[in-house]
Image 1 (cartoon, rainbow, N blue to C red):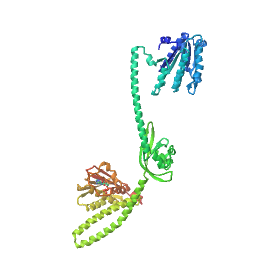
Image 2: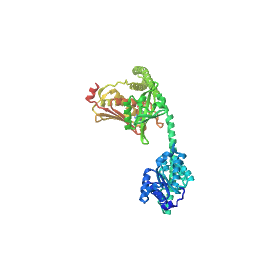
Image 3: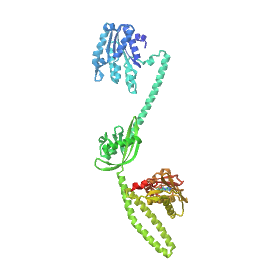
Image 4: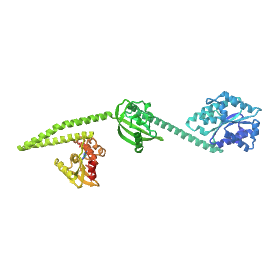
Length: 579
Ligand code: ADP
């Protein structure tokens, strides 16, 4: 709007100017008031202190005598915030007070037949406070006042006060309250009608893309709501206890139903607690140590611990803790599974295996005794057929004995009762002996022994022998189409390295670490089934580890397997230490 348009302004008008910058507001304001003063109008300025001061400076620069105008009552300048505080009641402008304070001011200014111009910043202050609703009510009060008295009122709003979709209704309402709406300066500075059309077109495009963006945001919000809903249902329905912990404070921020049931505590009782306080760690130090470890590893799996519940019961739990980023902060999630029943079952199974293998051992031992008596007796009678059958029985009894011994070993390992002898022994001789013995049990395979280390190993000779027998028997068993098994004995720095290589069915990658677990057997529908219990490698692995060595496999399905055993070699210090 130019000076000319201020002059053209009707006597009674309520218009609004939106502004993007304060400088523009001051320019417009000084034009509006300056024009009024020059025309002899009475001017009322309800503005903030900086705006009132800035305005007076500009008016004086234009050569207007503000002081005289003020003395004559032609220029009235009042603080907007003070005026506002006198007319507001419980966050809303009071009509009675408005009429009393502002209405009477207008009447006084109009005395002597002056036209009245008002600049009001009260509404802008209300908007800045976020009270757009009060601003709209105030605009309505100005309109009511305009019905009774004639004045032209200039309201100014900073455009940024309406940034956000939520203000769409308020903005429309404010525009409706005014007889004239003047866009912000980025539009009004354009003089050329062509340029103005261009600006409007650009604004239309912006409005469209904003609408599209808002629609997309709403869809994203909906997706988020659905996913949050789903997460909540999973969280609450989970049979595992779930705890959410703030890593900064170590305190619980959320817990699901299963967790409250497991601990026998309410949700409220759990919130704000640290994990050691609910018995998940022995003490604060252990709790802090675990938090530190988690910061380092991000995820800790399958820790088992004994938990005491509120009812005094002990439960064995297994838990996985994960640290992850949620928006701009980290959270820890603990998934806690009650494995008490599983543990009890395992224990009962162990007890059963131990008892059954003990019970089986006695009859099998006497079976073996009577068998050898019978073999000796028949040997004198030269009954070839009978001797052949006895040899078959003997082989089966040996298998049975081995199975029972393995089961007994497992039981002893579980209870820590397996005793290991400690001695130095000649590993080359042991390998030779075992290869010869196992060769005696097979007619299908040739066992080839290569390499020597000429050094002594340290530990339980029989147990290491048991490992080699197991590896050789497996090599033969799992290579029915092949005829060779290679055994290599080498020295690798200060450890012995024995490898047993076969050319049989091999082991697929996904099974390779599992075959060392208790009772694990690879089942393949394309393969025939092989007899066994799946405990030989478990026992072998335990024995090798107990000797400070390693047992591992290299294999490809269909291309055979090589099992490797490393054992530390004997040195004097070891013998001393073991004494
Ligand atoms: P098992 O009595 O079943 O042989 P082990 O513990 O000795 O028990 O072996 C576990 C499983 O590992 C076997 O069931 C078999 O699937 C696999 N395995 C062991 N040795 C070999 C091998 N040399 N070649 C292929 N698979 C093997």
